[in-house]
Image (cartoon, rainbow, N blue to C red; front, side, top):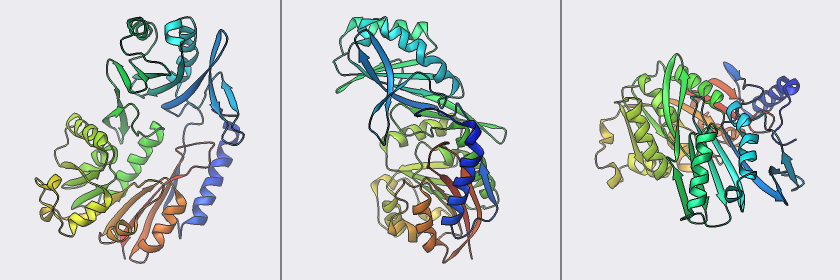
Length: 360
């Protein structure tokens, strides 16, 4: 059932993922499989709201049957979200101005104890003093740190639109601003495992690191101490701004993040000038390692060829099929040294994996 967990089947489903990954990749040297908690592992959750006469409740849609499924509890969600769901719904049902045309509720929580709730409406809420008063009262009554109200072309923030997560890796805390409605790692336990593994692979690389698809600086901040300097790139303006906050918050002084797409990085390294790089002297870097964490489509043709120009390649993948495709090219010049499976999405077919390669 949607949102449910099956701890008794966890070991079997992890083994099935391991087998599938092993069959796809050319080899799996130094393989590690990182287990997720068997329940309460998702720090993000989104639910549609269904209204029937005097009742309202959470629903999700079954992807196969397209039928709505009532959600009374969600043991996939981390404990603070799971504990908040029904008290929040009770307050909404007893407060007409909060309930009226409420369409969806999104939760964003952290291991460090913050909770952001977004209430999404199919009616205007801007200028609705009654809604504003009720939302403020809701924030005071329940363990909610921040509330956002959304409607078409409207966004009301009480009192900020982000949370700050603290991930503890190798005995060190790393702090990350996570903005509502932007990409963040949904399983913070696996996020910690991924950072630990990436740091271990690169601890003896030396030189400088170049990173593509860096998001809010999640990996680059944790990897910075393994390199002399780090240049990270990201196309999302929101993520770049968040990364700058995170660099300052973590007091990282050898990391520069610029707004560039992966294909633009290739062009810049081949001599094309970009105004966004006017303060960056690319020729002064001694890149020994490249790190990529691409979307499900994997690397584009130019980037796939470009990564082979570096001695060390660290590749985090959310799609083993495109990873295997990319490795067909990369393994012509590089040797797989380490591989890992991160069970980011237990009880689903999704596989998150990592490979570390060195030039032959």
